[in-house]
Length: 199
Image 1 (cartoon, rainbow, N blue to C red):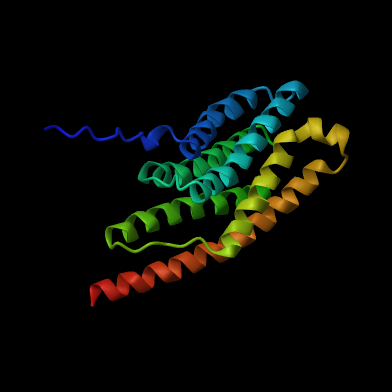
Image 2 (image 1 turned 180 degrees about the vertical axis):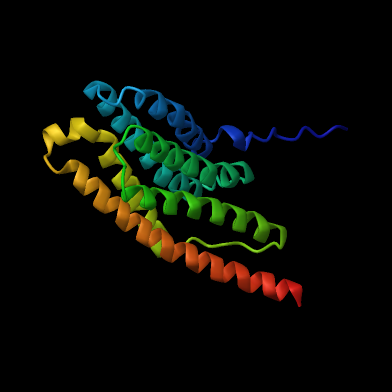
């Protein structure tokens, strides 16, 4: 007698993963819109897409935890989507001159930290060591996303709220400072595991 087992629903299309896919799709959309930096409409649409994408960064984790939709695919794609959104936005804002001068260093610090932590996580994964996200890292992400949202508004935002650009750059430097702190924290933890592994 053959027993018919219920078909398992694929986790690839659960709500948490769909939110992550949406964030990935938002990356080229924001980049395309920022190719017209002097067009106010393009700027505001880019802000709207970016804000929705940033909200999904919180929502996908919440949905995964609340409705037990955590999956290996989601754990892999979530940080990738975050880093692509941040890196692509930073590059476009540097290219159109919204981020310029000394503020380029803030963007460089943020990008370098993202690469460093990604490499560190990959190495520690081989050692079966997880890297928990600290509270400060969550604050860093929040400040970083707000800073980018303000800067993406650019000249269009300046016409609505004078000083918008300065506010965005101040928040970007704050995010860079938090980035240095959390990057050092991750690096210290990683080096400790490397040293222990060599013994």
